[in-house]
Image 1 (cartoon, rainbow, N blue to C red):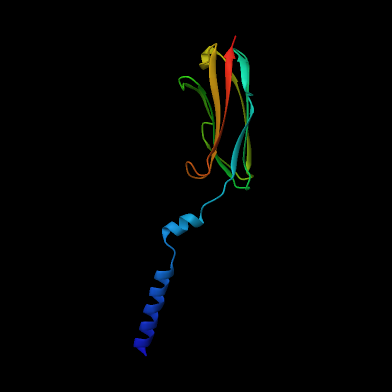
Image 2: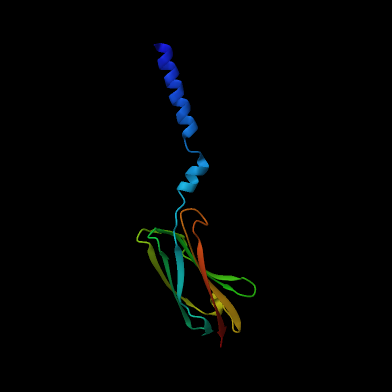
Length: 146
C-alpha cells in the first residue's frame, strides 16, 4: 500500500512539473496592450518669436484604459540636438484614469538656450511600467525668429 501511495505521489509531482508554465510563457501572458498615444496640442508647428512665451500642452492617453505610467516632454535643437527643456523631473506619474494632461510655459529667451533663426523639436513620449513598454512618441518642429 505504501508503495502504491509513494508511486502515485511521484507521478503527480512529475505531472505538475511537466505541465507547469515556463518563464517565457509567463512573460507572453503578462504582455499589456497599453495602446498609448501622445498628442502635442501646443506648441503648433511654425514660426515662434524670440522672447515670447511658449505654451506647452500635451495629452497622454491609453486607448485601452491602462494607467499612464511614465511621460516625458523635451525640446531640443533640430541641428545639434542641444536640449533646452526636459520635464517632468520625475517621469513616473502613474495616472490610473488612462489619461494625463501636461501643461507648462517656457520663455523663448537666450537665457533658456534659444536663439534667432534656429529650428527646434518638441518631443512627447509615454511608456508603461518598464522602460520602453508600449512606448509611443510624437514630435513637432518649430522655428524661432525675431
